[in-house]
Image (cartoon, rainbow, N blue to C red; front, side):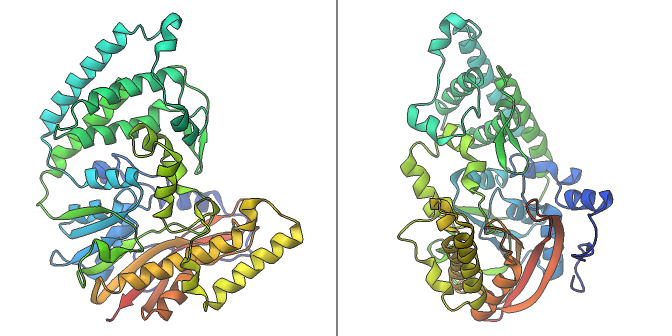
Length: 445
């Protein structure tokens, strides 16, 4: 850890015995949301989102003031932009996933009157419950009339990720929300439903990968949604005490920043891009993305994936060219060659396994393309913090993401100030210690 950082450090002795319970608990807790941070941040959050206190640490370290502007080019559900807004710092986010974009945009919109939001939601709840009562929701004789997804939508989500009756109730509630799409609370109410779907209504579980757990035959859908709305209203009363400051979240590709951001407009970057592994990030938000209408067809899903940095084999396409950005990066090519050699030695022949090496090249190429484009947006002296992690998903070949990203940044003219340790974790497959790090850069112009 470099001098001046507030983040604690774990010992990184790879030969040491298995970590103690204290260390394991520490690794878990350092990424947790503090109770005092819940307002807005907890309206909807990725299970592996980086914590607000990390944003605060780097804002303080960079000396960012209210006269400056911060960018999160891989905005996710808005951790950086929400925290900046709380601190009175102007910010902008860029996010390609439409569900996450909705979350970031809503979590930085503190304008709705909390009492009117609650009243509107309760009226919608009453109408929804009245319709459900008329439909005889528990009568097996009428279950054939329950609402459901069409065949193509059903194929997009994990099988059994939501049971028929909770799905029916959710779709009825969504119809009532859609009928009032012009209401000033529409997006807040949809985000509250997305949170309720993931946390309470569906059969999903996260550990940290998304999976399907025990089926819930029924769930109090409207009640869970109202609980999320009540939390929002309570938080809005607190958040509206903060001074007003600009926070914008664009729905765009982080490799094409000049399309949405002004030249020389950013003083700092704090972000966590995807890591190079086999995690399909669109699966994490797939159910709510389909239910809220962001993804309805395979073509919609493909378009979404094409707007993302290629971090896994499920979003690699024949026409992709980002790998040309790292054709002369020795370490990237060495890792790709090692992955391919190991694949051949092990006789791995599936379509996905054949793409492991290329996915690695495309990932780092996409990050190089992003960093190259970003140079036009930064002001001279801008400071950057990228939270990334080591990976060994591809046939156990170790990828030291932070070091490689630092090398790429250096080749593009950035100054590498530090690679700070954020936390460590143990790889399930290899039992090796894996670093999660913050790559700290400066753009001198």
